[in-house]
Image (cartoon, rainbow over all chains, first blue to last red):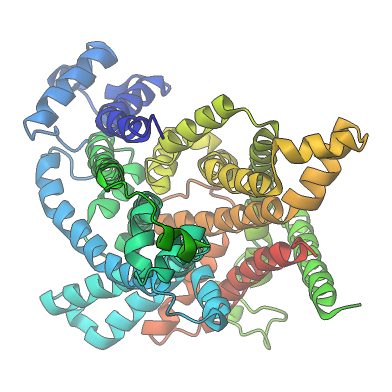
Length: 315
Length: 277
């Protein structure tokens, strides 16, 4: 209790380090691959001018120079150019299209997960439904995505890539993300278990005897764990977004990351991975804030001297 | 025998049968698919028993067996690695060292800070084309899953009493190997350790199917297996057009989904079989 600040401090440090660490590791991996990075973009057997290209893209002066150059550009919003996916196109341009779509997808996918968490917290879902939830949670995102893609194609036919169909695909993708791979079942069961365990604590019984409600008493104590669960679930959704975006043809960050990986486009992968790590950092910071606010709230609570009646009530 | 015991035994028998079937199919899988036979294109299971044929008349049995070969060893290896980590987490909780616990928690925070798929794709990116395979990805997935498994096993060990439980058994005169190996791991950590291992096995199979499917729809080689092999994702890819077009490949889709269902059921049954009495 005396070092309550340690956990949030570690999270803040991790949140700051992550967006630096991820591109640094990827840069190191580019140079760890057999052959030099310039020949990955432009193999000397099939294209001339590899050295010129290496100089133009800052690949000729080693990993440190490349990393700091790339980071300096990224801070100003310049993520370099695509190496292979859309050769020569600015990655920032690709990200400008992709990031809003992924954020919309995640925003919508949080709705079923959030509703599941609220239902779990309020103990509204009967235990009899646990088996159903668990079975639904076993279905992989790929299978549900295929079903959703087929439904959109059947419903819209040749207009499957029109504006309306795109919105439907986004909504279907969010629903898939919210249900598949145990997202909903984890939200319901995880939150319910957390609150049920907390409700067994003696202070909750004392609060009930004093005529207080359960939730305002338990919430400050479960808030850090809830924030941790929420962060894990959002990361899970972000992970699943790769599959959902590719199968449902949603032009998001996951689709971009997949395309970059498939074609060994390090320019795109560096930028997309950094965006993913920025979202992770934001979630880490959010969790740290929740922990700090909770600790502050718990510490500022007035210390009441126990009167004879409250002691009796507690007994 | 009580109903619960029967359920456990049945679930165990089913899971074991599935595991053996997976191993057998992987072992017997042909090196290459049979040569095409246009006269058998899209043959149904009735026309070409037992599972029918693909668009070029090649038996789907070979798809199922080669897919089993792709996933069998890596998924089992990943499951075992996670089980090992979970046992370690539980045992460390029984040792009761707060410093070790803090270090593990910090490591878990770092490992768990990024979306798993991002890490998997970065690993896939740097595997040389001639060394592509599911095993490195499966082991990466296992390492990413390890902190959660260790945490859960540590929570079980803590509920058990942790270091005090061990002390109490020592007071009875039991040796360390019996306390840790039998009382802690086999009797108390078993349900959570086996369930975690089974879940990771299933996740690795699903990961392989997802990665292969995403590659195959883009007409690119998969990160998870050599080009000469096909995966269960190819069954889904072959069968998907039957949902939206007039292509008679529904049997391939059904087979792909059935294989996914069997893997999920196997994982579930392993967890049930290992439940505490």
